[in-house]
Length: 181
Image (cartoon, rainbow, N blue to C red):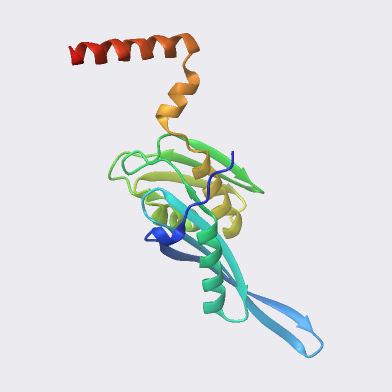
C-alpha cells in the first residue's frame, strides 16, 4: 500500500537528532573520520519521518539527514494523545511493542523510540524495544509500527459483512429522510 508523498514545505516540522556516529576509514596515510547522523522529523500531529545522513562534518550530516527525513514522511492516526490500538512490529533483529495509554501517562519508551514519539505528537504511550537496541533499527521499527496503525472506522468497515453495510446505509438514508420531513 503506497502512500502519496507528503509535501514537507507546507508543514511546520520539528526535528530531533537521535544518534551521531563517528566512523573511520583506514587509508594509506592513517584514518579518515566521517560522521553519520540519524534524525527524526515530525509535525507533532500524526506525521513523522526518519533520515540518515553521512558527511565529513557533523552539521552537514545532520542537514543531509533532515533533508532525507522530509522526503520519507508518513502519516498515522492518533486517538486524542495516544494511538488507537496495540501494534507489534519487527525490523531486522529489533522488535517493538507499542500500546496505547490513558491520558497523563506520558511517553514510556527507550531513547530512539521516545524521540520518534515526541516529534510525532504522541503524548501517552507505552513502548518496549526487544532484541537488538541498535538506534537505526529501533527507529525503523518504531516508524514501521506507526505505519501499521489503522483508523478504527476503517477497521470497522473491513470487519463488517456486506449485508450489514447495506442495512446500515439504508438506515442512514431513512434517518436523513425523517430529519428532512
